[in-house]
Length: 430
Image (tube, rainbow, N blue to C red; front, side):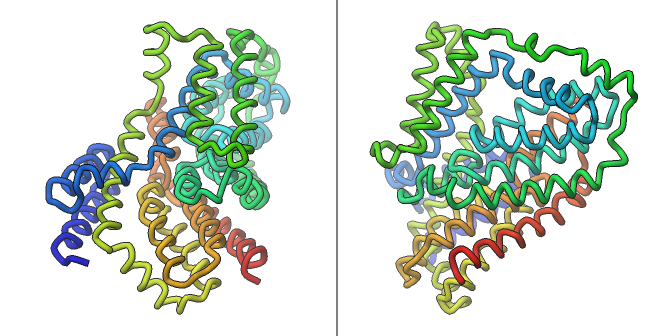
């Protein structure tokens, strides 16, 4: 490891990390500035930098964002929210539980960032009609979105990154290994949230009746497009399950679904395409680009290998101790910093552990996925979905304070990770 280059790579990475946490400068600007610095200071050549960008992760995100952008035009998500409110007779507490379940399921099948963008405006609208405080709903939806997103390859950015980096871990592998435990953790979290908020969530009989009078079918603005969207989404998810047998990358499947939906929905004029691509989170995608290059600098200078060696020394190469270290370290770190940069750093580290002697890396990958995704619930800055919900809530005049969220989120995160710890040990290491 060359001292100068490794020092520059570590220095730029740590400064970028500190600025991302501080939120003084937008994290995308920080990541891109760091990436440019790493190249300009000679840590990476431009070709090397491009090589470290994971285009499979980017392609998967773009494809799913396009599918959701078109689907949102049908009114499907407003339909689901009003249907849920009617299903529970306008009862605020039961509504919170149902919205949590819908959010978790949508996060597993779409992704948690997209899900909260669609669910929060509808939640604010319904809580206004019921005259109840929306903050318990929004906090519970943040938690449900991160737990639900843990269940599948496409549900949460950390899982997308892990699945892209480890080809053996396909869509079905994530479902087989994470869906069951995610469901158990979701149930535990929702029960506790219901106990915490049960006295706050009350409304009048008149307001409940006003919700019951709404017709969810009126929310569907384009039934023909909805059928097309549901068909394409079903086909895309089927291909996710089969992508390894079909020898297709997950990004290819997502882009296939996106292009097919654009063609079938006849959204191929300049104006329509601009409208669709305007909804793609390009700022988030560029954040990924900068981050991949920053981590690439740590890989090329040998910093990641050194960290792997030190971790192996700390755990003496014991698979059980190593898995537990990764699980808890991932959870606590992801609570206080965005889980995306943390996972980007950990992926090459775990790969190096395989080279250094741990033969079965699978428990380590599932420990990283569970720790990073569940840890995102620890604080308001733990995951992208949290930041988006907080921003939307503040715009609507209902700010969620850092401390208020942490008092709920951090204990639930520690309990969730404890349950995940038992699961990892019993399933893979006992």
